[in-house]
Figure 1: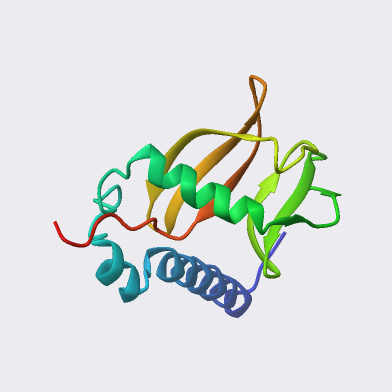
Figure 2: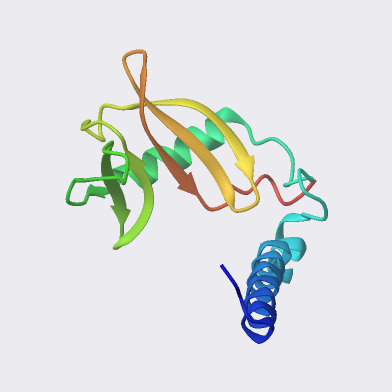
Length: 139
């Protein structure tokens, strides 16, 4: 197969520009994340631990106002049931479960807030993402 030089140069320029664009968007982080969460490095500080009772209260309030959207399937065939509050997706269920009966599993803080596992029995059936649960502002 003989490729003529201008086509090869054009192809290389296209590949280099696509890789450069992907790296640019991957590395770009909004400045608001750094200001709001103190996120300076990958794996940086997201504001410390939040007491479990604060997370439980926030989750119970969110789930009290939540509804389940139309169930669907993700690209690999798993169940996908969005959890909505005011028409905004705050999480997903991977198995159909009554939102008033799920329990709160483990949780952790990420750059955009709290990630909370929803548990039914001994199985994780979904997860919700809450905006950062604030700690006491006094200290």
